[in-house]
Amino acid sequence: MSPALGRILVIAPHPDDEVLGCGGTIARIAAEGGEAHVAVVTRGCPPAFTEEMTQRVRCEAKTAHACLGVRQTHWLDLPAAQIAQTPHSTVNAALQALLQEVKPDTLLIPFVGDVHMDHQLIFLSSLVAARPTQAHYPRTIMAYETVSETNWNAPYVTPTFVPNVFIDIESTLDRKLEAASMFGSQMKNFPHERSIETLRALAIVRGTAVHLRAAEAFVLLRNVM
Image (cartoon, rainbow, N blue to C red; front, side, top):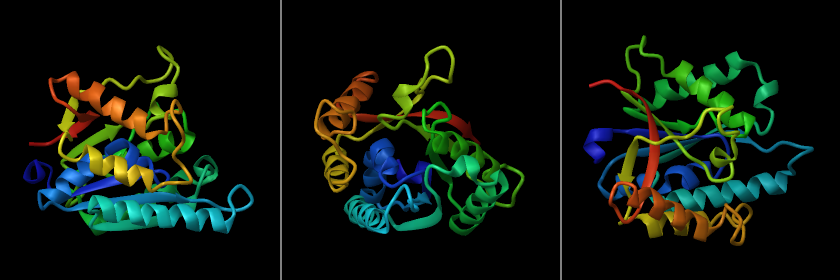
């Protein structure tokens, strides 16, 4: 799989989105000798987030990324839960500079139908940054699902996540769950969606849809062959 996807870059609006949505894929790519990068777009800022809270979740993310085998974590430090108040050109420019630096072959981004406005706007800015009019651009773009964001959309009103790409993560599901458990400030007890049990159940459901034991699901947005 790794040669097919090449160097991947996962765009995470907030720390933990990358693990919830594609932690198993990241771990599999790393295990197969591939190169996986993660960009955390936002940073918690006062008064909504204390510096202590921000540093705690950042430390959790660093530990989780090491567990998954992430090659490099990129911190863009735009204001969390304030992307709607941030000039669109600022978000576009930050992501475009990142893509020019990393030069990913595959880009994994949040889904446009997610209930969180940060996710929606970062989806759009990711597509702007990855426009195929540059010397180097991601040949493949896929959107991942994030529990408690993707599934809380309004059916028939907002875009619905209907996956058409499934990546086998049977061998790395436990690694994904281990990485998720490192986000002590974010994970919750079952039956909350952000729980280990929910992540395992979703992987099984996505897997059995294509006769696998565990999978992560994506919506393919672009694939240049």
